[in-house]
Length: 397
Ligand SMILES: Cc1ncc(COP(=O)(O)O)c(C=O)c1O
Image 1 (cartoon, helix red, strand yellow):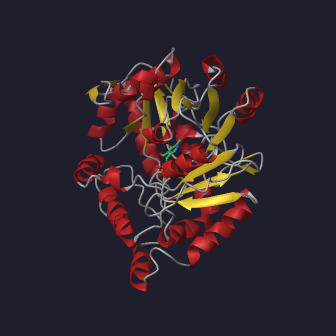
Image 2 (cartoon, helix red, strand yellow; image 1 turned 90 degrees about the vertical axis):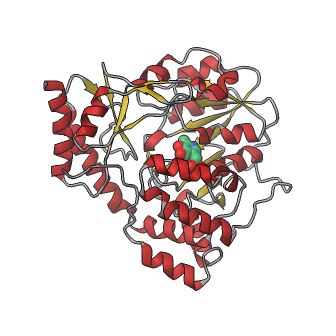
Image 3 (tube, helix red, strand yellow; image 1 turned 120 degrees about the vertical axis):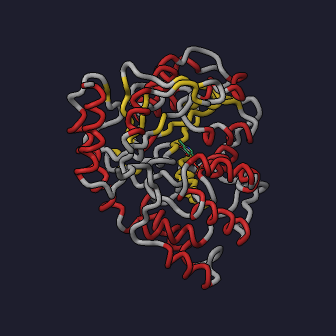
């Protein structure tokens, strides 16, 4: 039986030959694509200040610094998110405050209102997995309460709402080019967009130059680690002390700019393909009463597609380690279909316990019941029908 698994290694316009071409041209770090990408971004997001860096989370850190956040300032974030959203806040010594999510997995405006205090200074509006957050409501809350609005479009590069690009709605916006985003570079590059007139990067914050050494480390990560199962990646990365190497804010390298630039050229095609795949999954599964498809909306691009099982759930400890699997996951695994759980809520993680206050019921219950399906663009109808057919069989048996 053919295995159906998550495979993010799918560049269309670019590939291994381009990688070697760069390596031997000596233009891995510096070169013309940084300027080209910069101009293309200005054409895309409008005339704003743009910083090309090495990771989305470092773009976020740079952005928080540019807003002048101080120790003790509170930044409201969704608890249903990855650690990358919280570490930049801790690095600038501000205080994360967790808000709940709605059924679409994005931060809930009502919950934001519920956690406001006199110390609230900013809110991070992430468009999780590409699905736009409730921009109008959240912008209103930010305006009425004098909060900085951070438009975290890490997973939503080139996606639009009302003909306006996500990432351009706040005081600052960020994009990520990590492995599972709308467009992936080699080293998970990032972009900071500064929208308002006021903030600018203070002079005392330096952005390190990208170095060949760090580039080779990250390219190794991309080419070797991501080709193998996630478990391997984790252990090898740990062995190499990866987190230490990637924590300083470096400018983006030319080779990453090239990979991003090249993929921007055919993004519309990629988007159409993804929408076709999402529609097919939805069409197949919408009649099944035992599950919901909480993020699906006609015409909306998603980087990940979750189903929400009503009964079955995963049980995890407070280090996110699985204690008991969702039985549907096990069933699909045995039939060659890889699935993935959602984030473990940040407020339940032991290391962030001290920041938790309040009831985040929706985040907790949703994160137990979510299962991501493999939705690669290369899948034809037959593969999608097989995946959905197996889910239906599970519920029939
Ligand atoms: C919502 C959100 N913000 C920020 C980031 C950080 O991006 P990066 O992985 O490029 O540091 C991510 C990454 O997964 C994300 O999902």
